[in-house]
Image 1 (cartoon, rainbow, N blue to C red):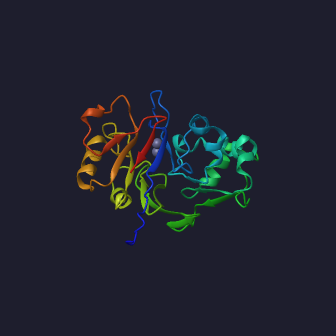
Image 2 (cartoon, rainbow, N blue to C red):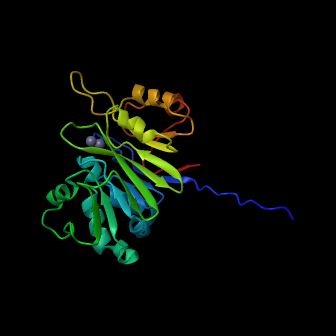
Image 3 (tube, protein in one colour):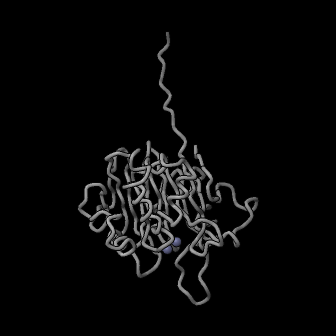
Length: 262
Ligand SMILES: [Zn+2]
Ligand SMILES: [Zn+2]
């Protein structure tokens, strides 16, 4: 009998889109994703409702790590009601005592304190129910079987903004958060299987760029290897190109859709 070689089964990467709009969302939901059913990439205002639409209280209870890119409202305003649900709602009973990790740029907890006020919906920073990864956090950390790197990107000059690379089952999902074109975008994309990239568009005349625009995303597509799939989010749906006009290897995120990437 010949030797059998086990074939390593590579699971598709699963990304659920909670929303794909930029700040002026024109009625779309604001950009956010769930990776592998357990990592929340930003917490836009509709996060709790969108998770319920995705899979009820179970989908909320399965979130184990939240990666906040920066402290603009469209990326963090879902945290208050998400934490309330995890502390006191149906998801809290499914979840038990498991701690949640929340990573973000310096000042994340205090910014959320400013939003939530003195309510105990937001546990104090030292409370063991939430592990805060901010301030002096190393640029690479592990949470369970996940490895996460953050890389500072260039967005609003008055805010620190992070992009993330999540290593999962030997694969890499990169997320730019909000950024203008800068070397960090290519550093995030290096050897990634999927790059989730923002595209909120060119600045008003005379203003400094704080976002990527379509020509920059197309140029990024040109210089990245084909194996790195690009999922575009945080875009203006009224100014987006038709799906048929997009270059191969670029997928436009749509609210509520699930994307498996082989
Ligand atoms: Zn934004
Ligand atoms: Zn922003």
